Length: 291
Image 1 (cartoon, helix red, strand yellow):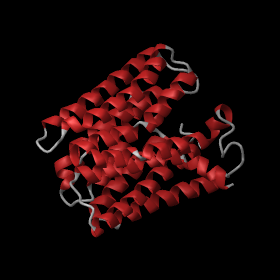
Image 2 (spheres, one colour):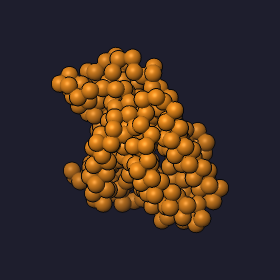
Image 3 (tube, rainbow, N blue to C red):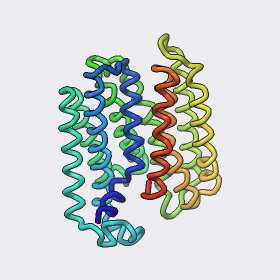
Image 4 (tube, helix red, strand yellow):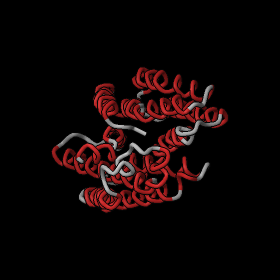
């Protein structure tokens, strides 16, 4: 039963959410003193609850569809009940909001906004061709801002950073719509265009006087090498297998994206510390489904 619940939580994905918080923490200019380490810990617990709750409730909402398309998943296979999964997802979302509230009122408000966006996506947004990817992107952008909220007043200065994960997640969500039955080439082309936009945004941050663009280049090159090839393959031949590979690469490369941006704000050692999460996420991804 424990394995079934871990499969619902998609632990490899949760690790990528930690990277968002670490990026936001760096972009806010937070230092690693005792008080800020406690703040960071609360925010990592918050994103664990919010992301974990969101993916669990996603499977709850998809239980009938999964019974037909993916009967091996924990709920349709009977390894966990629909009621228990719903309770777990709800508790995790509430935990996320509570932990964020331990940091500040603003953090709690951002967490509540993320939870609301998650519920809208799980129940309705993911079925919408255009709104769905944007809806999912807003969840991830909010997660980055949750990390920024570690420093009072930083959200008003760094709010624009949330646009990068919004665009990137929109690309992943758009192409993922064909991971069961196959997709369309036009969707793949749009997803590639969005990823190229994200790369341009990373480089564009170089206009900020405090941003160290040269340090980001190795991370940005790694990000490009990991993401573009599988997305191009999925665009050329939008089969379920290639689309699933592209989605998996896109999700895991969130860590590299976060490392690239964070290194510009906090230096290459900080970027490497975020990048160190990638092996953990990949290892978990081999044991538990990512999509």
